[in-house]
Amino acid sequence: MKYFFVFGFIFFLLSIVLFCFIPFSNAFMEIDSFAYVGYVGNYETYGQFNVPNDNICHNWYSLGYPIFLILVRKVYGNSYYPIICIQVLLALLIIFLIFKIASYFFSKKIAYWSMFLASINLGFLLYPQFILTETLLCFLLMFGLERFCNFLYKQRIASLLFSGFILGLSIVVKSAAIFFIPFLILVYLFDNKSSFFNFVYNSILFILIFCIPVGGYILRNKIVYGYYYLKAVDKVNLYTFYLPQLLEEIDGISHDEAMQKISSLSKVKEFASGDGWEDIKALLIESVKKNPGTAVFVWLKNVTKTIFGLYTNHIKVLLYPEIKNDNCYCSFFSLKGSLWAKIWGYLSFHTDSKFLIGLGIVEVIWNVFRYLLVLIALLFLFLNRKYLIFFLFGGYLGYFAMITGHAGCARFRFLMEPILVVLIALALVVLYNFFLNKDEIIFTK
Image 1: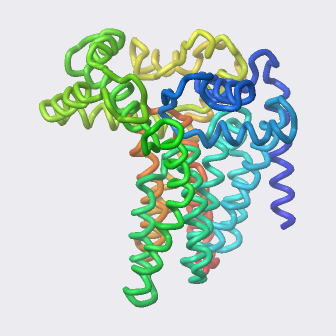
Image 2: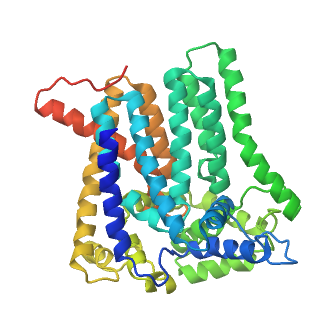
Image 3: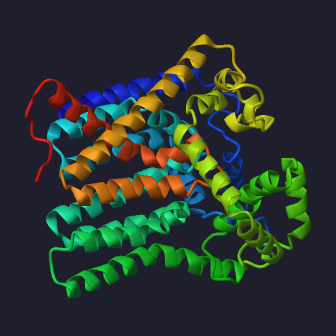
């Protein structure tokens, strides 16, 4: 535990340093933050998420995070500073969960390295400072994944059921893991050590427990809005984020023109019923069928944004409030000029700070280097026939990368960071053993 306290101290120290540089005017707010804060304001004023006499569903995402904000503010008062403190504590717990997950499969040395790398990871330092779902969501995902790994390691059915419940709670916060559950069941099937009947029985229990918080939230929406409703984020992501980009590529039109074309087809009055998207859906299907290559290109371009985007540019959102106020975010692919002009424009966006530009350069180099380490780690797992770990970790990264194809952003990579740091730690120890001719134990079993 001494390493946890040492690395935890490093993490807290770096978090405090970042906190001290954030302007108090409009602090902790990103463009998505205003929606969450708006729902909190409605609830604290009217006792409900909508204004009085308004039963229309305006939220296209789950309300778990606003509920979290409300609960914290009820306990600690109407300030957002305690929320930031609690999110920093949740990030510290994520670091501990990373250590636990690594410990199930690898040596203590790799687990400690994972914890150290997480404690200095820019994503873990940055996103707890925002009023955003990322920290709470990542904590729930890691808690659920840790319990699932505990089940694989010790075959305790209670761990599997608790994993299902925690992952169900994550859906109420944000539905990112909604299709990750079938993948975990495949992992369980791959590692099943009992009869097929037990596998089926346990999997059914896992799904049922997962559905308890999800079903409770859906039932709440039925009572409030009159529809069994979980979220419309998939429709919004596909039709208002991905489709405009696709039309830009296919028709050679501007983003504003693409949005205007989509808006003219929209008949959406509220989100709970799922009605009003029919014409837009038909346009998307037609566009993908006629231009499958372009459709794949746009999706993978966004995934590339997620994988290689810079957290440094999101630090600027904290330091320079006018970025979010003017909605003038920077995308590498939207910049004009030569490759080097684009790189410089991306690094120097909205700042002349040598420190921030230098940090961006370091992050670019580290991103390239660390993905090489991740590939080395995955190759090492495969060659050593550790197929379960290869499938679990590789599948996790692939899933949470590919679901960001609607609109890539470095922020979306935050959910990938826990598994990335474990694989990087594995690669570093493997390379250390190789170059120094060591024969240290890598795996626990």
